[in-house]
Length: 297
Image 1: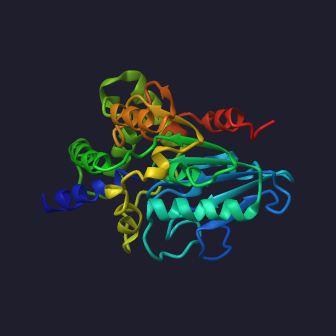
Image 2: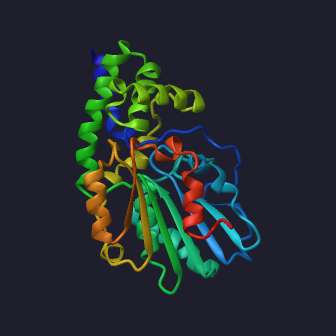
């Protein structure tokens, strides 16, 4: 049973993750990287900000939205997407870094698209761009303290439940069971439609990383998330903000996400029968976001 306890202990970190296969381009160790488009001529900047243990590939086709008047910039977490595993993610500092980058670039419009922890970073960044036309899209947004700390306890229980269902102490079958919970919520084993959908999604995302986090990457990504508090700037942001959130999200449960959205004046779009991994459950969602904020023609 000691093996199961060790696996369960990973859940607070792993539960905050949407783990994807890593991308291959290497342009150095800084957090920000231009994915497509021309930063010099762009009138619109699109920032893609992922979550804990998540590659920027979670944003799929958005990485290639760039053109002469649109530049797409990735924010890479330490140890992923060819960024060195250095330092720790700090939500407020990451928001400031993105805002400073956008201010230097001089574009008129800034669209920040964040997933999970990345949504919190996008909220903080969007509040620090006075004089810009700013839009913030948050998908499965993390919530301020103590919300994520409390969610970690529930997610640990979910992970232990997956240990029981997998009837094994090997990480791979446990993780694959738990990933279904991330995709569709806790009730997927008891819903025939969700079970079939989960099987189809797992086949579609067969390259989902199935190794436990190592080398300090989990702590690097998640420690600050658990204690992040919304800054006064973010609480009074002038940005237009829209949240897309799964009705069955186990990482940031919908009632907590609603309260957060209300607090900062964000519009809330509910995704029925959807867990935390909304961008994978709804492959077309990223296009909806691009259209909503005028990035896609």
